[in-house]
Length: 272
Image (cartoon, rainbow, N blue to C red; front, side):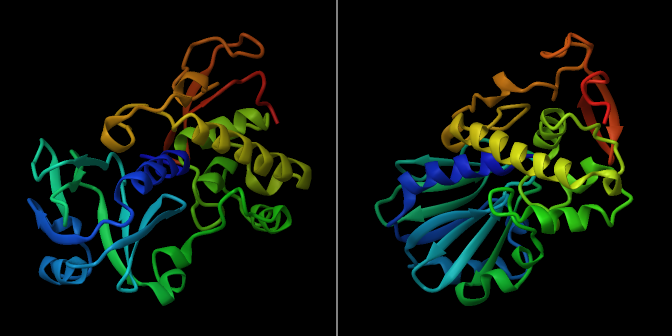
């Protein structure tokens, strides 16, 4: 699933391609991606609106329209976007936004888990799904984070995956943050010290920022706009490195299940 760096990368690419473009039609090969309203209503809201900005909130892509509506797109497991100079459908393209210059933005999703919802701009952050999100690592208060962590008997990895506590991290970066912080991913959260909480937040910021700079991690199916691959996968320390030597101590990286997710860690470096 694309995590915060991958979503930021997609958003930055979309900004360069579609801001200022007017939507004249929306077509669908599968209307089930649109949630809460009918596809006819979806079309009506979007037709003749102009995209004035593209942002993200954690893993959600936000298309701001000049009619005071916001289109929220969640890529889920492997949603992607492609731009074309004229209307066309490629394999796994399911939604097509047609612009006044005849160019298109197609949503592509081979596993069909992605979603679209529409919100009013004035209450965008006061309604689901965004109202439930915790702050991203770049904006989180360490003391607030620590207060939530110390009340939980779950594993620290489970906490890092909980979007209500700190949003943006997924399986890849939770593993990398635990390694960078020298903390075992299955350590019980209420055993984390304030200093460790501070390190977790700082390492989250560092790792996510570096991944954003490198266009995210192209693991499994992730690519950014128009199938551009990221490069941060070349700098991962533990995730996907089962049985390879740790870059710090040469101990073999192990893979176990923590919080229901495949989890990679170094049994020597991450003993805390």
